[in-house]
Amino acid sequence: MKGCSTNILDLSQRKQIMNHNDKWLNRWLPLIKKKCAEKSLLEIGCGWGWDTKLLVDAGVSVIGIDMSEEYLDQAKALVPEATFLHQDMQQKFPGENKYNVIVASLSMHYMTWENTVKMISRVKDSLTGDGLFLCRVNSVNDINYGAVGNPEVDRHYYLVDGKLKRFFDKNDVKELFDSGWNILSLEEHTIDRFEKPKVVWEVISEKNQDLRSMR
Ligand SMILES: C[S@@+](CC[C@H](N)C(=O)[O-])C[C@H]1O[C@@H](n2cnc3c(N)ncnc32)[C@H](O)[C@@H]1O
Image (tube, rainbow, N blue to C red; front, side, top):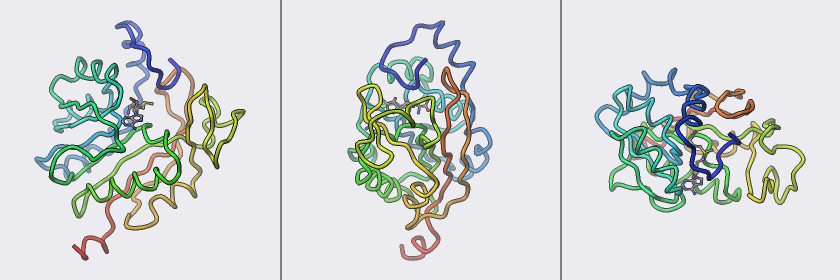
């Protein structure tokens, strides 16, 4: 499977891919569960629901949003206990209340830098005072999935197989989380989720103490 395509996968393909599901959230589960308490976690760009399943199996209530109806159908079949909504992440997030924990794995890649900055800011605004955000984004070292050899339309923003795709270096990530965030962990990993190794930044951040005291 090539990263995130729009094709529906049959059962055997899904089983094969499930064997490659890197369970990146496992080590953060104690913190996620502590922060979530009884509240639902919001998952942005949940895709076919692998992370949703890991979270639900651990006892976390999840609301997943994605703009692909096909992926949502697969997610619903995989994790019937979760709530899934067909929604563009650049629109207002669901629910009236703020979230204690938000997750976004490999889904915030398809925006201009300006909109990426707005997105991170909106995630922050949608978190409660000590809210936690766990995300993964493409690294500039993700050479198997377009980080080299494609036309660059803006800095670190490439036309890959007809689709604009953003890659991040460490400074990009630091800039995104520079204001109002406390970065708990920022690590570059090579992951085994798709057919070839993929290089990502894993960023675990919480809302900044100073912001909390201003509330
Ligand atoms: C590479 S897949 C990752 C799926 C899943 N989070 C994972 O890690 O396996 C990216 C997902 O983000 C979704 N996505 C991309 N842009 C989106 C947007 N603007 N709003 C909602 N979902 C979006 C895609 O439909 C796709 O399901």
